[in-house]
Image: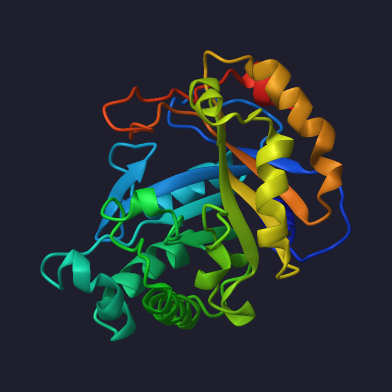
Length: 295
C-alpha cells in the first residue's frame, strides 16, 4: 500500500522550481522491461473504441491490466488516448462535433471503467499533436479548426473527471507537438494539469533545413510556447534517430534540462516510427539502448 501511495504522490505534479528531471519510456521494443530508473512508462491506446488494442501490444491484456503491469514495474503510467472515430457512432469529419455533443460519452465511460478497475495513479494524454498540419487526415482529431478541438477536448475531459471522481493520482496532459500555433488549441487551465509536447531529432531531416537538431535548439523553440501557462511541462515523446550519435545527443540534452524550470519529465520513444517524414521518404528508427537512456 505504501508503494501505491508513493506513486500517487509522485503523479500530483504542479508548476514548481526546477528539480531533477525524471525520465520514462514508451517501450514498444520491450527492451526496458527490467530497466531501473524509469519513473514513467508510456502506452498508446490504439483507439478508444478498442480497449484491448494497446501499444506496446500486450496479448490478452486490457487497459486495466496494462496499467497495473506498469505499476508493477514501479512506474507511473502515461496513457495516450487516441480518439479515432467509431463508425457506428459517426465519421472522421464529424468526430470533434460528435464528442462535443456527447455521442462518445459512453466510449469515455467504458475506458474510465478500466482505469477505475486499475485504481492507481496515471497521466491521461488525450488527442495529442492536434495542431501539427502533417497530422491532418492522419489523426481524426487533428484540425486547423482549433475552436472545434477545444470544445471537444473540454467536453471529453469533463466526462473523464466525472467518471473518475474519487480516483486519486489522475492528471490530464494537454500535449500539442509544441508548434508556434499550439496555444490556439489551449482548452483552459481548468482542463489541463500538465503541458506536454513531442521532440524528435534526425540528422537526415535536420540537414535539409539547416537545424543543429540538438535538444536545446528544438526545446528552446517549444518551451516559450508551452511555459506561458505556468503548468508543469513534460516531453511526452522524445527520440534521436538510431543511426545518429544517440549517446552524445542524450548527454547534451540532460546537460541543459536545468535551463527550463518548468520541465519535470522526458519520456523516450523506443520504437521505429510508423510514418515517413517526407513524401516517399524513409521511416526513422528511434530505438535506443537502456544503457544510453537510463540515468
